[in-house]
Image 1 (cartoon, rainbow, N blue to C red):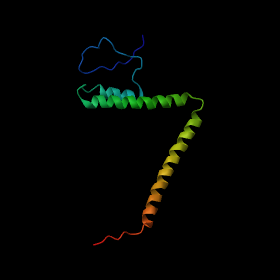
Image 2: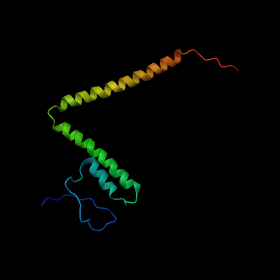
Image 3: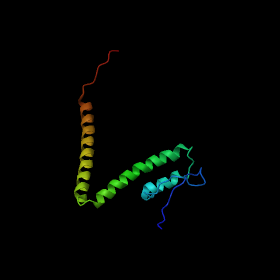
Image 4: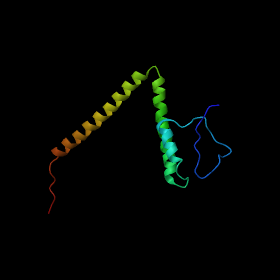
Length: 111
């Protein structure tokens, strides 16, 4: 018998007839789910925290898949190169915009 943590609403003293435990909470997403289930279902923060936990779980799954992949070093290198390229392009664009603005002739506005 394996012990699996099942998160339960604070509004229901007993478990509902149908509940899932196929994917027990773990990692940062599990921590966020535990925080969410301390709040009432009437509290919007309960639902927003659960949505955030779902998104974090997706990222955790991507990292887990990448870790297991034999191509992980290549994927990591491409990711870093892409992020660096995007950063440098946006930085260069903002520098070009500043240089372009300084070269514009002043506009004469009639008084």
